[in-house]
Length: 376
Image (cartoon, rainbow, N blue to C red):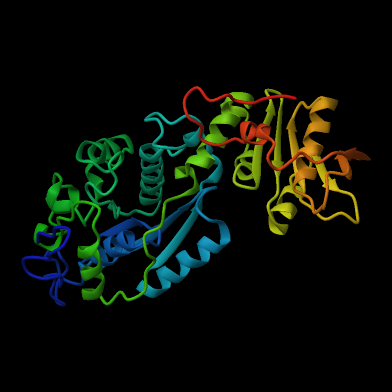
């Protein structure tokens, strides 16, 4: 069956499997072949898993959790999506293992700090491990040829299959007829005519398939994980430069996604909360860092100072935090500085909102040759 980005041609979307036999022609009395389907909860992964299941394969969904995959809110959505398609779901938390992929990607980064090729290999290696542990026969992925220019072009898909160790035990059913035959087809467990030829970034074909399969609820395409965001990427690379890649911990990566980030000097970084939830989150990471907050009755953000700040750095940090406090003039504000069990109050003059140094300190994607930071 051929499917391009806009039209479904051939037999239609109904698989040619009869109720009296599996896709490989064996009778229902013959044990079904088993597959592990990588499952993000997105439409492509839903379609790939459902298609293979409808073709007579015993499919178990596998969601690989990592630090940037959304936490418990994401897990609830994943479980709901699995429930809707009626397939068994297994969630594996690989967060700690995945940090090594982000720190040292063999294939480098995309436009931000996103090691997409290495992430795909990492997910598939976990899929291979689960496949072997559960006596399954192959792994299913919802990848579509050409959907992502860096990680899903033809050669990349072949390289990822090889480097993951799966080789021809990896089936991408949505684009299978545009790729070399893999073991499920070679062995006759599935027929080429029941697989598809999707290509490119348009999604009309997937939407049509969802309708044919009776899949009515699925998420719309999103912008990708936090690692693909250039602002976050700038913070990651700043941390790598000043801390060392292997010294950036799970907590550090989490903090990089919170608040405003300022590089005050090579030795000092300041993170300022933008709302109450971020203030509370930053306060929760105060151990081993300096916490700066406005002293009552002043209202304003919580902030963390990281690195090895001098007294001058702490004074400057307090002035930056004071700039974001509620105040009507430039009069000094009392700021509470907490270092471990030591707590003191300092008077800080708020920086002017138009102070050009704020932009220079801000950690964000900058044009080549831009000044990294400025002092007093």
